[in-house]
Length: 147
Image (cartoon, rainbow, N blue to C red):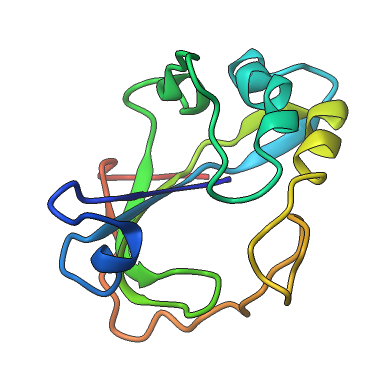
């Protein structure tokens, strides 16, 4: 799952694109399990109201930290780009190393969501191939990370 946010110094995501500290994306990996991830319940229960980008759920409170691994878990950070066109550079990525669980039912519900691109109308596939590391510096909060 990618959570994309933009710096409040900019009036919109479009204005933040390509700017230093403009966009920060948090990536959370999930492993399919028989266990329901209760942190995802709010999302799954409200998918009927957010079928396309730009839709929102009014009057609801959601603690986004429910999606993240517990504090202190290792993560990686690097300067990359968006994964969908226009694949804008200068995006700060934070990638959690520890996978969360997602039930088969929850994953099926996620796959019903639409995207804003004609290349990939539904969530589930990759729009952009893996990019080379080049001279990118990858930081971590964990001095020694062992898989």
